[in-house]
Every structure is written in C-alpha cells, then in structure tokens.
Image (cartoon, one colour):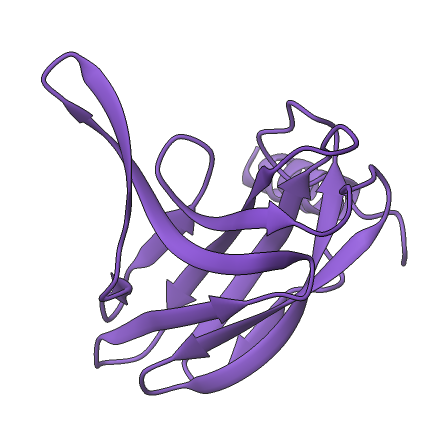
Length: 157
C-alpha cells in the first residue's frame, strides 16, 4: 500500500510541469514570475512573482524597475471597509525569514505605470528586483492571458 502511494506521488510529481526560470538569489527563491497581456495603448499593467525566504533573517523587496513603463512601483491591493483600495508601498515589502510572500493578483504586486508597449501573451519582459539584503536580480516575466491568475506551465524541458 505504501509503495503504491509512493509510486503514485512520484508519477504525479513528474507529471506536474515545473517552471524552468525560477531563480535563487541568496536565501530568496523567486518562483513563477508572470504578467497579464494588455490591450494596445493600455496605460498600466501588473507583474507577479512568489518570493520564498529560506534564510533566518527577514529581507525586503525595496524597488522594481522595468523598461516597459515610465514608472514601476510596488503596490498593495487591500480591503478598507467594503472598498478595495490600491496603494504604493514606498518602503517595499518585507519577506519574513522562513516565509513566502506572493505578489499576486488582488494583493501585493508590481505596478507598471505609463506602459511604453503592450504586453503580448506568450512573450517575456525583463524586470529588475532589488532586495535590501539579497541584492539585485533581473527576471523575465512570462506574459499570460489577460485574465491569468498564475503563470502558464513551462513546456521547456
């Protein structure tokens, strides 16, 4: 029975696509970076990535830059009473030691303001993230569908 369960879990793990572009920066793991496609002339877009801090000290995402927009900010969407509000996080986002922080639709996210180009499904855009302790890294955001809630599975193996 246990052998069957282990075999089934092993096969399931092999069947689930992995993202070939996950990145490790110091004690941080950056997983599933993506953005949503936009219509031509759209003024804004969002970017998303999951950040896992495997270390013993907190870190902080302090800034984000991208050539696809005139301004790139770290934002949060949160309910204030019965109203969803979005605001810039000028001090960035803390990535607590041993925890995971998701920059995802409806919560923390990267905000591209004053887009200089449309984001096209199937393409990638480079974004540079700067962390207080881990340093700076450039990652590629996979552009998914306009309503994507997660990155598309990678077929590159």
